[in-house]
Length: 262
Ligand code: BTN
Image (tube, rainbow, N blue to C red):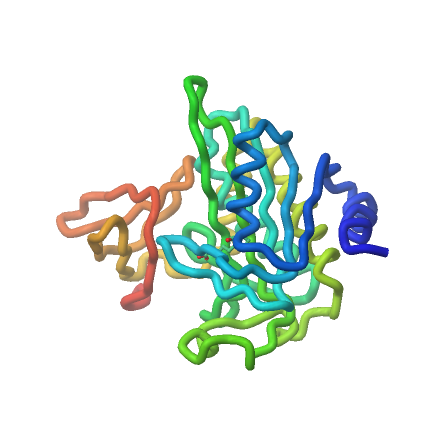
């Protein structure tokens, strides 16, 4: 059976979303670049592009996403009609953490959507959107999960900072089954985002790294802010208490821990 058929079967078994179209080449530049082209051409919601490896995988903040064989490289198209599409990236991180737990790996979320095990990166999400007169037209969620990477294929500078489902002792399942687990969880939270956005934020919080009250540094837009990590609000923004007790609301950035709460 080919991998798209395994994915469809695993999705049906989980009551996951029906994907109207799936492309799954062996190699591609970036699954998200391909899907953005399909989105601009009017592709329907839940169209997906996957690949066995990427030669130009992209990460957040303009970084590269090293994408050798043994990873899940998945981009999925959504056309949200609810009020708080800013929560979608959080919902995607949550879906990946839940799918990992299903496979036996307990991961933590770091805002906005890094998925970590003992501080090492298990998965990452890149959310890219286009807006028109009526708000957000489409969102391409690019999801990379380290399923069973061969450490020898990783550049030495990142080898110590990443982990994989296999390295963390997950049940050995094929990549299409990991994809189905993620997509089924994502569909559940996607359906909740309109009627009950608060449920997504509280579920996200319950899997977040317990850094609340501690001092963090957030690098965003060329600058860096230091403060106490207070919360994530109902639109997915990070609330940082900076000097003087003022609370700064951040929409994107890279969080690193400076010291824990006392
Ligand atoms: C991050 O920096 O944490 C986000 C990484 C996102 C990687 C995925 S892999 C599938 C999709 N295609 C890409 O080029 N990037 C995303």
